[in-house]
Length: 161
Ligand code: SME
Image (cartoon, rainbow, N blue to C red):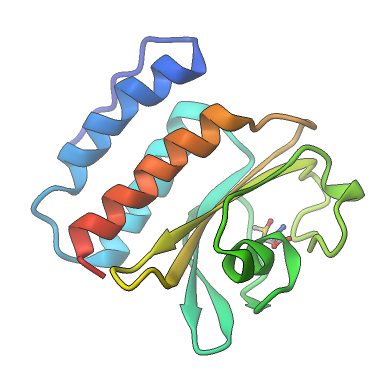
C-alpha cells in the first residue's frame, strides 16, 4: 500500500513533493508496465486531469499504454496528433487550446488543453510519450513541462532504456 502525500497547492511545489514519492514508488520494480501504470496513477491523483498516460513506440506508430481516464485512441502514426508531433520533434509540446492546434487528435470531446512529453532511451530516441489532457484551456505550462520531464527522465533512468 503506497499512499501519496501532496499538501502543496502551488504547482511547482506539488511536483517537488510528488517526484521523490514517485521515485520511491518505482524504485526496485523492474517491470516497465507496472511503473508506467503507477506513474499515471500518481499524476491523476495529484492533478485530477481528465486523462494522463503513456503511448509506446512500436515500429512506426504509437500504441496506447498504461493510463488513467476515459478510453483513448489506441494507435497514433508518427507525426500525427500532438503525440506523434512530440515524438517526431523530440520535444515537449504544450497546447493551450487543442481546437486551435493543427493535427490534434480528439480522443475525448472533453479535452481542451494538452501536454505531451517525450520519454527518451539512452540513445536519445523516443521510446514513449507521456500525455496529459485537461477539460479546461491553458491548464499546462512550463512548470508541467519541467515536472513531467523529470518524471519521464526518472522512467528512462530506471529502465536504462
Ligand atoms: N490528443 C492526442 C491523442 C491522445 S489522447 O488525447 C489521449 C493527440 O493529438 O495526439
